[in-house]
Length: 165
Image 1: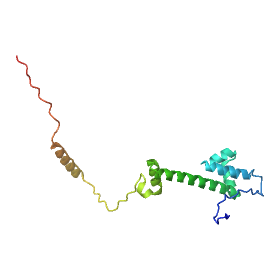
Image 2: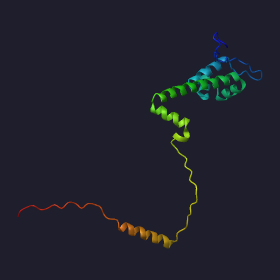
Image 3: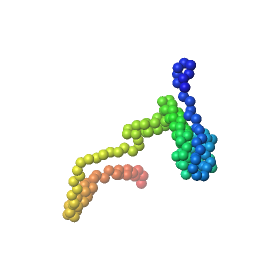
Image 4: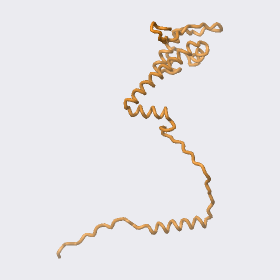
């Protein structure tokens, strides 16, 4: 829609009711799409929406297939909610909120900021089996090195007997 100043104004898509011509009536109305959209803006997931609408989760899934306006209401509501949260997070991050900064970077630049780093090590490892004689020799060498370690435990101070008898 064009305004008087030749700018385009965004208007929300209307959610219209499309009747299901086959089978038992689903009970779906346009009000369900409007309510679902509002619940998505509040961050509700499908299971919670089904609970509030007093329908089953499988009905939510079926309505998504049967009523494109219902599926769009969910999709648009979630996108609007996510956009609002992302905007608020971004504002907090650029204003110096350290937690928001960390969260933003861990999600936007995972390869640099995530807690877990994947390190790839390549090359060959040469493993040889030691004989019992080799093992005994290694243990003897280790024991010899341990025996040569200087005991650095301080001696207790000597107390001089100053009593005159």
